[in-house]
Amino acid sequence: MRTIASPPVIGPVLRQERIEVIDILRGVAILGILIVNMRRFSMPEGLPAQQLWPNAVDGTVDRLILFFSQEKFKALFSLLFGLGLAVQMMRAEARGARFLPLYARRLCVLFLIGAAHFLLVWDGDILHDYALLGLVLLLFRRCSPKTLLLGAGVLLAIPMLFHGITTYYSITGHVNPRVKEWITYENGVEGDGTSDGVFISEPTLTTIGDECVLNQQSIIQCESQEDGTFKSGPTTLGARSTIGVGAFVLYDVTMGDGSVLAADSFLMKGEYVPPDARWGGNPAREL
Image 1 (cartoon, rainbow, N blue to C red):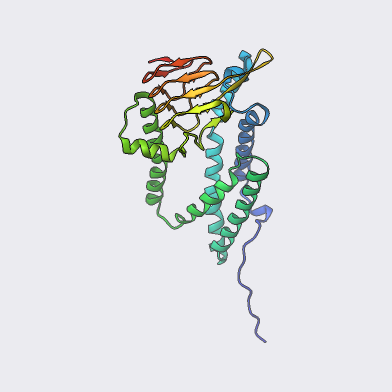
Image 2: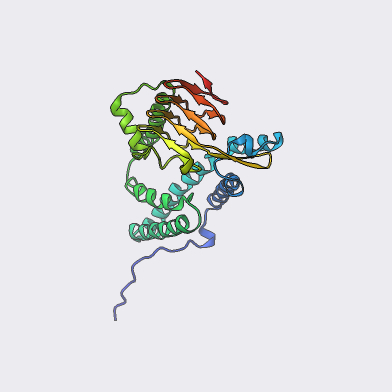
């Protein structure tokens, strides 16, 4: 009687086969991400740092967290995500098992978990992003080191180029019309000027003119808690005005037509920016 050998399979790694250094680094990365996100979980979203941390000690700790942790642990976790793919692929090949169906199945499960977290718990979920990017990562699994370095360089250059163009336009107001149209499209700006990459605390108090450009990570804050009192006021962004990348606009502000607020600037409450003027800094002043 012949015995038919069952096909090789891969599954959870035995304890003695685990790479402890990778597990430790993964735990450190998750802890770092938690430390950074604790700020967002425990405080109101969209308020400037001087309102979140009026105490000098708290402000110093917050800046240290941003300096030592912001994005760094995400980068470490992303590195370990790619390393995990490589380790799983090598172990599957060593056992003669099929790697691609199992890994694709795991990515699908990860995407479903991330989508549920995004829809039901918190819109800052990144698990679904990892699942989608994992599918892209599969395309590079057979590439040579030279091709991997080239691909990594291109992928890193794209956001740097985009940020450079938007920052230049925020400061100077001069850019090729086609590039401006592309910037507006890439930032998700709709016909009324609103954007997926912009936080507007109270849309009903915000007036946005035609062809207004709202860059990524900019904030329009129409209310504030000051000295135990809730204060609010309308904000008007004129036609063809521009809010730079990461800029913050407080309430009761008017920006004239064609005016520009530079990247990473903080426009204080009650300010009036004349038409075609260019302001920047913290607090923002005419450049």
